[in-house]
Image 1 (cartoon, helix red, strand yellow):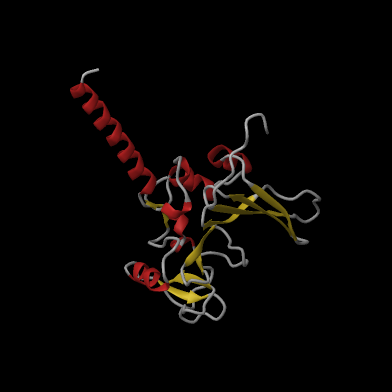
Image 2: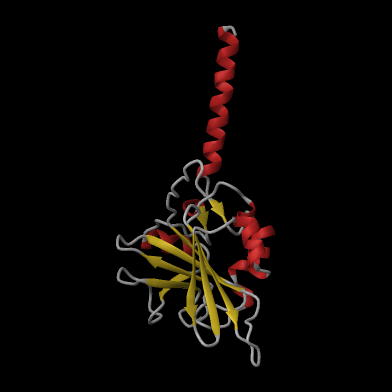
Length: 223
């Protein structure tokens, strides 16, 4: 191979790597892209109504103000401040059943973004369909929120790294599926119906975006 041809091959390879890097590092707005149909993403790339993991309280407030939204302390519905742990996103403090909740870590940065299902949130409050975030979702992501099933979860996301099945009450059987490499936690509920021993089909409760973790590679010959 002559030097001229070798130069062009090297340049082409470099452009491919650069292009791939741009795909992996770009921001993925969950309201604009069909997130669950994509491959190779993780939670650090995801934006939910302008919010991203690692944002400071000021950055989060600035991002939400552009959309006419605010952060309110989940405990007392006052303005979210430096000492707040969990904060709901809404237009007014009196609006309950918020479909997006964030958690601030020890360094005052967003460590978790919770997006609730279209029907009911983990606290039991019915949501307002007119302002539910999931209404703007597309394709497989919208299907996941509005027509959840375990089969669909496995098809789109594969097998989780961990499953917790011991979160049970007399009326609800809750399960948590953790995907470390994605930085994604999925919560589902199965409701016990009157006069029936078997619970209902699983229903999506919420998903959480948290910081992704590296997953150890399995050695050859090990399952």
